[in-house]
Amino acid sequence: MSDSPLFPPTAPPARPVSPGLYLVATPIGNLRDITLRALDVLAAADLVLAEDTRVTAKLLTAYGLKAKLERCDDHASARAAEIALERLKAGEVVALVSDAGTPLVSDPGYVVARAAVAEGLPVHPVPGPSSLLAALCIAGLPADRVLFAGFLPPRSGARRTALEALRPGRQTLVFFESGPRLRDSLADMAEVLGPRPAAVARELTKLYEECVRGTLAELAADPRLDAPKGEIVVVVGPGEAETASAADADAALAEALTRLPPGEAAAEVSKALNLPRKPLYKRALELKGR
Image (cartoon, rainbow, N blue to C red; front, side):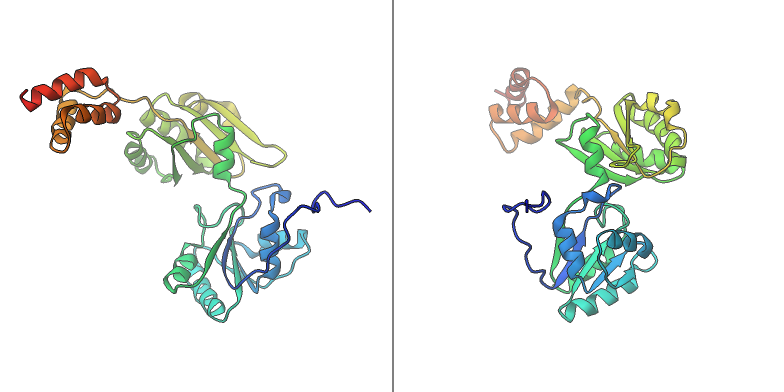
């Protein structure tokens, strides 16, 4: 009999699941994205805290698992934390899952995890699917410096205020958004953040997976994004670096010269403000009075 491709001879054996709280990532669409370790933990769990017990029950059934389920959404997290602490102190295995993806990432569960940490109880991550990382991978935008901003406020005024606070940053931005609000959010992003490249990813890992790319203004007007269904991830590329003024350079040099000799001060400011080093060194000598 041939070896199963799912469990080749070289696959590491499952380890016993020790007592503790396990934050278990679950599939964001394709059920085959569940990890072997996640299945081990869910099979061993004395209790599974779930954002929606009906959704989690379907996942467990798909893999022939049974577990005691307790609701842990925004309204029930305090009670879920009490139950979890009681079980954990009794030496049991408690798993916490959201409807899809990694728990605590714009999903319930923080109250439970914080309570366990505060009590000095073991808390373990069981990494796996994440719509944030999945969208970032296929967006075609820089992924070396990323700021995850979650859901923006639903009203335009508050949303623009939040975007203004993010505008000076020079990193890729990642947002979650709902279908009905997507077009208005993209329009506000285009207005506040300017002509940045962006991508809208939806139905990730599902049959109709889609990633639409363009500038923010182009995406705001794209007919393919008319009230799309499902959860949506918006990835926005970093803005262009603004050229520092002479006053900014002088202020930075003056501060650096209190700690460093002119050459090192010029090098530090050059890197920080993206300005050529040689003129900065000359200016540093002038400020130093040499």
